[in-house]
Length: 269
Image 1 (cartoon, rainbow, N blue to C red):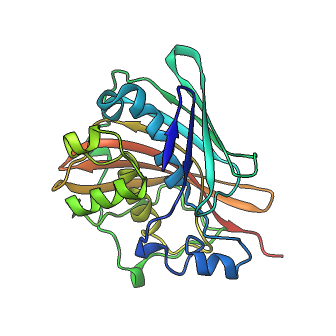
Image 2: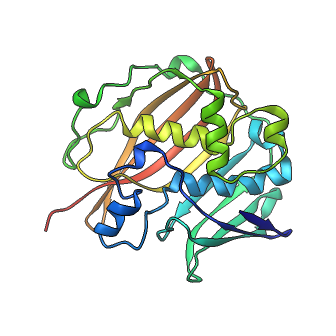
């Protein structure tokens, strides 16, 4: 449920019952066994809630030509009440801050107004098959993985999936039932599952930052494909991060590009 004013949005974040969460830190039971008070909300989920600010202001134009960035600072738990604060920035951009239930900054970023953009050249983005779980190539923190490409299932986005995604975000903006389009969080989350499912990582994957450029809306019945490549790895304070560049297609047409930074391993000891 959300309530909004011109510069603040209050909402309660609740995870949906996605089967991919089972057995992970995004599962209430598992998270509590690990010492957390509830399931941790994935960063892609927080991105989806940030995007509501952009859609409220610019509607379909932002979904088709808007951009955004976010960094995730502190855990947000299933059922947390948070507040999104908006501040004006240069060139019509809007700064975003997500304040957690404890008054601490949980995430921050910005959204930019719609602008004329050209989609990437598709020949630079090969679509490779997503390997089955038993055939995922392993990744170790000492490996040089820059240039590795991820796969895609190439499956059709059904109306039920898009409606479920909209419900997961408690999204009530009239643009969605009027047009039938997917919520911006839908391609972000689905691309994340395909990128992360392309490898066997040495530890849990945690999204720490992302950038997004949108090129169009996704609709039910369209074929969803993701092309991705590892562009960077780095270490900081014993933690190892990977950066991926990702292009999402709907029926062969670019609808979004994501640059995602994720924690994927830690030094032993």
